[in-house]
Structures are given as C-alpha cells and as structure tokens.
Length: 300
Image (cartoon, rainbow, N blue to C red; front, side, top):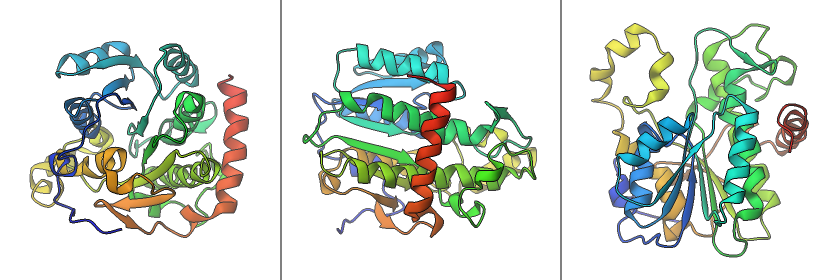
C-alpha cells in the first residue's frame, strides 16, 4: 500500500474529496487538541459525530464551536461507571456507529495515581477504551466498511521489556511516569491487534497509530514547567495539530485503507511496533485480564 502522504501531511490533505455523509463517528477526547481537530474534520466532511469528553458540559462546548451534526456525550475514562453509561447512551441512540476513534488519553502524570487499584494511565488510556469499544460493537454495521482507530504512541517503546508488567499494574512498585505511559500504549496496540483478529470475518477494520509529537495538545498538561517553557521552540520541530491528526483521520476515512486491518501506522504509513506490542500471547493474556477487570469494576 503506497500513498503520497508523509509527516507534513495535514487533515485537509488526507481527507480531500472524502464524503462521510450518512456516517456516524464516535470520538473520545473530542474537546481539545487532536480530538477537536478530528471533530471539525469529520463533521465538515458530512459525518455525524458523537463527541465524547470527560463531562457533558465540556462535550457541549466543543460541539458548540463547530458547524456540523453532533451529539455531545459524557464519558469520563477514569470511571468505568461513566463508560458504562456512555455505552448505554450510544446503544439507545438508535444510530449505527460506522467509525470509532479512540483518541483520548493522559500522558505521564508525575505522581502515581490509582483507580480500582490500577495505575491511572492503564485505566484511562487503555481499559476504558477496551470497555467502550467492546460495549458498542453490536451497533457497528458488519460487512459495511466500519472502522475502529485506536491512538497509541511511539512512546510504547518506553514500556517494560516484557511489554505489560502484569505483576505491577498498580504501579505501587517503582512508578515511573514514562514507563507506565509506554505500557498503556503497548496495551492499546495489543488491544487493536487482538480485536482485529476477532473481527477479521465481519468487515470491521481495526488499526492503531502514532500521531507523533505535537506541542499544542492537552496531553502535555502533566509535564513540568521547564518542558512547557520550551514549547514555543518545540513547535519548530514538531507537528502542528492538523498534521498530528492526519493519520487518525486517514485511517478513519480514506478509501485506500478501507480493507487494511491489524496494523500500526505512523505518518499515514504502516510502521513496525515493538516486539512486545505485537506478541499475540501477551495480547490474549491482556484481553482475558481486561474482561475480568471490566466485569469486576465496570459491569455490563
């Protein structure tokens, strides 16, 4: 699969000529950064977007800033109860969901935070999306080109060598912000690959991606003052938000990748994740554990 897109391609460029009329998109983290850019692009190309954010107020504010067809949705990814309510609202809406873009996430909080006895990034970045996507699969049209796009990061390479440290998911032993951020992104890649295997026969594609370093996203809110102080300089060497969101928009809507599944992308091209992130045995172990965690803390 070849295309002319690269690290400098923008959302406008990858979506040129794409018509999403009649499509419904479920987008997490829709209120800022890459998510808000994606919200603008999906609606401007004709899609109806179920725009999820941590609170209903925040989601409504994002929707109010754009022209287009939207439904604001509260989905606090730090609460599996909130995710369960969001699933119910999507299912009760009467809409088929054609495209899911799991965009939301947090990055490297300096101090250990736990939810349900688990390190927070694991829950917010991975487990809640595992629950959300599995919860709405049966309202996605089968054999009709439905797509699931899951953001990850090249920072997945900062994870433990084993990929997922199943014996320290709490983070209680030796919490390192970037290691646990990396682990949550390994989990997202493993989830995408495992889900693609499960959906291989029904026409729903699943891919994951690295958006690259973007200086102007809300992910950086946990970073130190020194890093924030050099953001103006970083902008000279990093992607703009429209460039950063290009790959997820490409995977969500471009006809070139309509039948591509189970892949990790960077700069709109297939890339190679770490060995641990493509280890099916680790992925299946993670899937089983995730089902148990959702059952214990999120319910159905």
